[in-house]
Image 1 (spheres, rainbow, N blue to C red):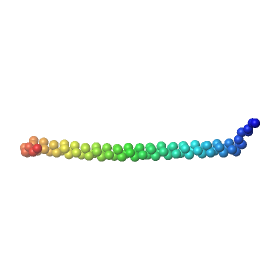
Image 2 (image 1 turned 90 degrees about the vertical axis):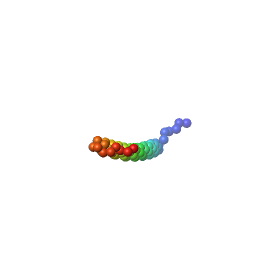
Image 3 (image 1 turned 30 degrees about the vertical axis):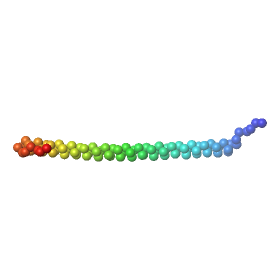
Amino acid sequence: MIFAPRAGSDTRRQIAESGKTLREGALRTYEQARDGANSAVNKARGAYDRGREAFDRTRRDVENTVSDAANEASDVLSGGSFPRA
C-alpha cells in the first residue's frame, strides 16, 4: 500500500508551528543573553566605582602626608623645632 503525503494545509500548519517554536526559542535566548550582559555591565560599573573611590581616598591620603611632611620640613628649615616622634 502506498501512502500519500500530507495535505498541503497540514504541511503549512506544521511549518508555521515549527517557525513559531523557533522564534520563541530565539527570543528566550536573546532575553537571557541581554539580561546576562546587563548584569555584567552593572557589576563592572560597581567595581569601577569602588576602585575609583579607593584611588581617590588613597590620593587624598598621600597628598595630606606629603603636605604634612613639607610643612614639617619647612618648619625645621626656618629654625623651628624638630618634630617629635
